Length: 167
Length: 150
Image (cartoon, rainbow over all chains, first blue to last red; front, side, top):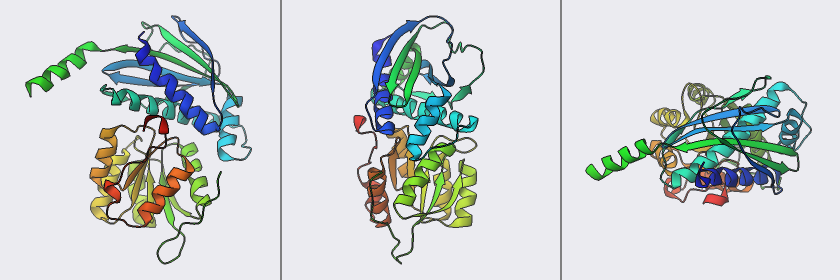
């Protein structure tokens, strides 16, 4: 997997967590993973299709999600399933939204799909044929994991570039 | 959160907001900021279609509108609201801040754009600016809350 595809996600995750939690986040783990993803808590999967295709999974424990939500709300919030799911989805939306903005600035075009939440015991295969980068970040509220599997779709980009030349 | 001087309408009444986002979590965060700016929540909606109905029902002073939502996306909702109410003040709030999105929203009639995660001080300045009814608002530089890519 190409590092230039991963870097925007790392930068965006760092910026979003630091801004939301008002404290810097620290990378504690960066590994390649070729197996079906086993989540560590509640996971939001966001699929991306276009010049770049793949998926990103944002994963954190329910306890961490409640701590983040409480920190953002400025008050202690009750730990409910809905709060956990909402928090995971919104964090995933912000990280992926900021990442695709960076990639779009580099000329890549694609569509981002709404997050799917996974909180059962099954593994997440996503794109099983693609190796993934697992990024662990330590925040003041606990650990957050990103599992990123991306690849270029050269054909579509070439087609668009050819069309632009012909126009 | 920092302290802010209350924002008022020209008749000195509180500013009334319609908050549109499919995430309850995101709406709560925006509402918390609005309240620190001295504003009132006129209504909430989780998709573009409900936003149109809520706009017609509540006639808010300002709409904070997400882009990616189920049923009807924010940019289409902006177009439909502005078609009926040309004086509607709509500020887009989205994590996806690339140029096509911003331009599309502004072309359909949105007044401004702020990227998530929203910094209260950035949103405050944008709201102050939009409330001033400056005709240049739509052409002003877009404020991206994520400074890392602005």
